[in-house]
Image 1 (cartoon, each protein chain N blue to C red):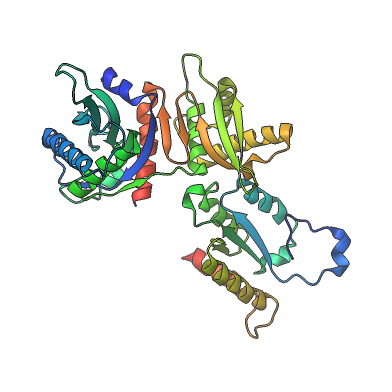
Image 2 (cartoon, one colour; image 1 turned 30 degrees about the vertical axis):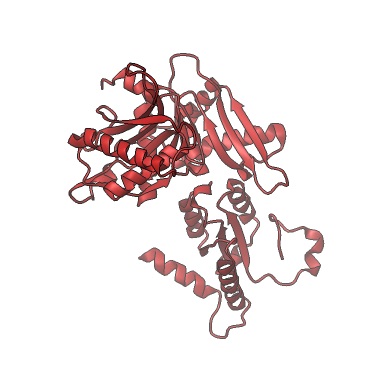
Length: 288
Length: 131
């Protein structure tokens, strides 16, 4: 799989906010330029109405839509679609460069479960990731919802899913030095909120996962439970605190980090498809 | 009577009335609560599992705060031949309805309803397993 390194680099090391999106009706890839123009006009109109962004009233927003041909799982997936908003200050010369201010992309990696059962004229791109001001996300989201009759919903990640992610990603082989595996827990029902951060040396975490996983390439709920129970037991032995009674809110590995409010940061291009596949699955189960 | 785990302290054994129903509460947001219940189950006399035990899973309203797989709890119910009830205590209506359900079960377990015994729960469980 040859990925365009420049485009892929755009996707790495940014904090993405996650949404699930229902299938888009009447979306045609040939019309990306038209859509960009229409979306640009919509944003300009909203700004005129004074309903939009507070900052940069003198800035023009330019919209670019493109296909990310290699961001897909199988041939059954639609290739990803990237939306980029750039600003150019109105007084400046023609040659001044546009400054990117917002990114959003729709994708589907092995999302066959959804696309199998969808009627004609619908395009399935269930996972949406955005980076940039929330006000732009709202504008872009409402234009897509109006134009393609779809629905965006914030994608939350449960502690159960976070523990799958940390087990999977801590077990990934990495050639160069990896950062620590970190789990952040929030302790409920206290007068003042308390967060506990539990950092584990990446080699220890991988060694633990290797003893737990029976079949390479396959992961079961039992294996994830055993992995987490070992971490909890170790912590309890030292600090006499039952982390299993707290809420796992954030996990961080060298591959990617994820937060229960539905935010993700992907750090390693090699594992980008794997991470997207998991997130696509979560998006689809939120839609169904 | 409420307890955070079993066994119950033996000092108060002679003061305790007869126990007709044991409800194990599992908070779907706390893996620890499931482990606690699993350990406590060992201290329950086998005769209770003829309809006098049930599992109550709370916090199901917040799907995104799940730390436990619902399959795991359902399997627990199957293993111990006891019903599993799901509820959300933060919703007043559901809380009241669940309480009423438990009281109805308790009345049957205590023998207050003529013609129906706790064993009926067990046969109801078996029916859905056969399907």
